[in-house]
Figure 1: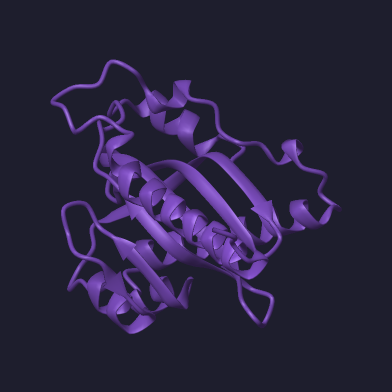
Figure 2: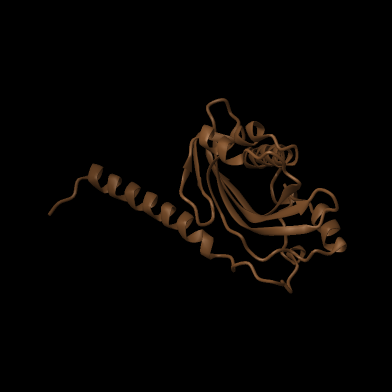
Length: 199
């Protein structure tokens, strides 16, 4: 049987979409489940430095812009501003929370972020980020810390797919994360994490 070039292209696109979906769905199993103690500090895993990119390159500028959006998300969490947090996501974004159903669209994402109070902040330690055209991926660890003393009270791994929007801004388009081992709640570890050259 002869396959047309159009059918072959459609088949390849379908395979790519299935591969991406399987990668996102299987990512939650890439990090060990939460344990009572962790012997390896998160600070032992190298973070990505801006020096890995030429700052004046297209990819370098995209990485810097993505870093700015990440900081906007972290500030929204810190100030308990669900609207600001949701604004970092694309209008057609969706994510899979650990053990939960898919949450789709910026309005639903905003509702999922709403809290009466939020006594913690979240920081992201980026381990890998790359940009290909209008899409980018980012893999790293998230660390939940109490606002009062900076003690680490949770953490895990995350995968974000970023997409450049029509206005040129980068937004989180797809997301999956898990709850993994908490980083060591040691003051020294917190200073190392805060001082890292993450993008």
